Length: 93
Image: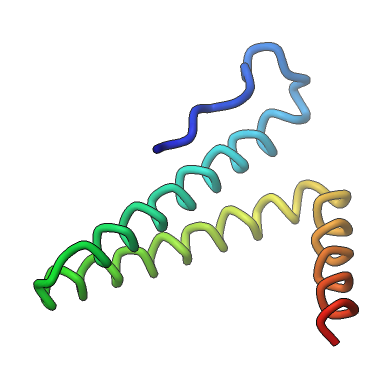
């Protein structure tokens, strides 16, 4: 269920390591969001559900923090993120 680190950091160019560790952090946060939302959906206990959903929301904030850092280090990533938003807006109207 949880993602594995897809790259060997040791073999990377020094200037790319920070970008990759941020991407790995983003993967971990997305896995956590998915896990906590699935667990919330499984329980009938409203208190447990509420806590799982609150924690999932916090993980989404962490995802945003990692993304902001990544976009500050990777201009190509930033450009392609904007291109993706534009394509969705164009296709959905």
